[in-house]
Length: 114
Length: 112
Image (cartoon, rainbow over all chains, first blue to last red; front, side, top):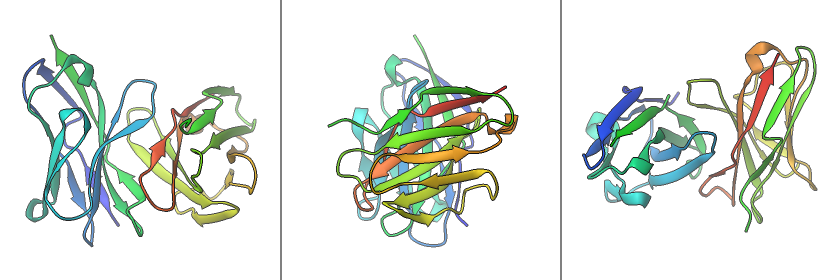
C-alpha cells in the first residue's frame, strides 16, 4: 500500500528566506505525486504535480518540486517566501489510471516571520 | 464556472443523530471523491463515485457511513448515528474523467 511521510509538522521561516518542505513516499509503481496547499478554513489548492518526464516541476506561486526516485522523495521548494505563503502544505501520492486516488501525508504547517 | 460546492459548511449534531453532507461537483465533472480530515491530520480517502456508481469505497468505515452520487443532484455523504469520533472536516473533490482533482471548501461536522 502507498504511504506518504512529511517529517516536519511545523516549519517557521523568515519572509524572504528560502523554503524546502520534505516529502517521502512509498509506492510500488511509478508514482503520481502532488503538492497541495490549504489555507485556514479553506479547501485544498493544487500547487504542482509530477506524472513523468522532467523531474523538476514548476508550479503556481513560485513553487517547484524535484522528484528523486533513488530517495523516494518529492520535496517542495521556494526561493523566497512571502507572508502570504503561511498555510498548511500536503504532499500526496496518487494511484489509479491517472493518479486520481490520492493518499496524503500528514501535512506541514508553515509559519512566516516578518 | 463555479467550483466544487459543499454544504453545509458547518454542521452540529448530537450523538445518535444523522449527518448529511452534500457536494455539487464542478460543471462537467462526473467523478466525485470524499475525504475526511481529522484535527491536526492529513486527508484520508473515503470513497470515489461516478454518476450512480461507487467505484472505490475502500476508505469508508464499514458501518454507519454511506455515499451516493445520483443521476441528478449532488453527491451525498450520510453518517448515521454519529459519534464524537466522527467530528472532522469532510472534503469533496471532483474531476473530469480521471484528471486533476478540484476540492471544495469542506463541511465541518461537530458532534456534541
